[in-house]
Amino acid sequence: MAWRTCSAALVLVLLSGIGEARNLLTVYTAAEAEHLAVVKQTLEAELPEVEVRWVRGSTGHLTTRLVSERSAPVADLILGLSSQSLALLKDHQVLEPFRPKAADQLRADFLDPTEPYSWTGIAAFAVGACFNTERASALGLIRPRSWRDLADPAYQGRIAMPHPASSGVGLILIATWVQLMGENEAWRFMEALHKNVAVYTGSGDAPCVQAARGERVIGLSFDMRALREQSQGAPIELLLPDDGVGLEMSGMALVAGRPAAKSEAARRVIEWASGQSAHKLFARFFGTLARTDVSSPRAYPPSAASRRIPSSSHWVAANRDRLLTEWDRRFGLAPR
Image 1 (cartoon, helix red, strand yellow):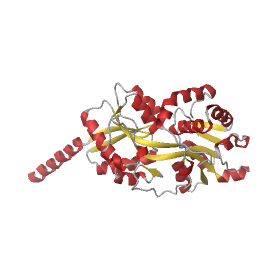
Image 2: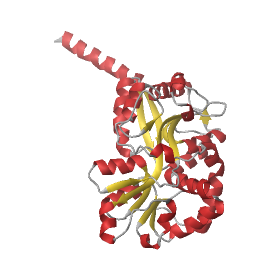
Image 3: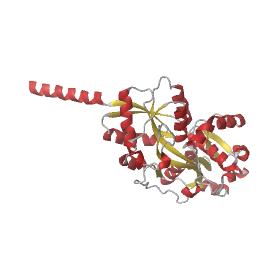
Image 4: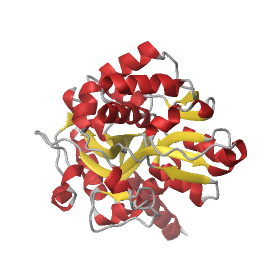
């Protein structure tokens, strides 16, 4: 009996030691909520020395928060934030330079293009629209082909759009229009579009969810959300306008100013996320991945690549404040 008691005590001590060895990382992310539990489970199984605590928020909120926390950082790691935000955070010296060993195995356009190297792309998505074919048919509305078609008065009150100040998708949308049409024409288009928008949402997926439910005919959103709603039986068609589609990356980076042990554990997570095993997991959620040796099983439109416009995370980051100030001056609405 005494032997069994000692053995049980020893097991408890060993288990306690294992628990203490796990390094708890606070990870800021704008990834979709349904992805996080899956990533956490796989990551912690493959990196048993690491435990992840997600802090999820919209792209705009997390970007502002990270800048404000620069002198006393809370996050150890960023995993799943847009590249334009990462470029902005780098300019504000929020990021700790780090290049994963697997960087040479990733697509060149998924890598931080300026020194010191500070962020790495994981996957990419295109902004477009979720089109509810059943609602459109019932209302006698035709399928839009170009961005300008969305300004047709026939769509008045039928469109949902992510708010550009809170949603990275919303910001990429207005940046896409400015780059495609030029400043003056883009703002004229947005004035006309504004008359058709029923609601500006706080996140990039919410407009597509509303369209899938039949609450809107069109939800301006991103490609993989449309394909997800479609796969679950919603009468949604992904629209990638003929005149050009903006592309954005989801990426990762270390947060500067964290203790050495936290920083080292966060480096291991970035190495893991750059690898083949993690990318096979990310392929469930994205159509375009940083690694060329992993492909997505999603039914990604073959025409998407040809419609993508040349864009730059640094251009969007450099023009973010100006675009948002002008948008607020013209429309001045809070997200809902």
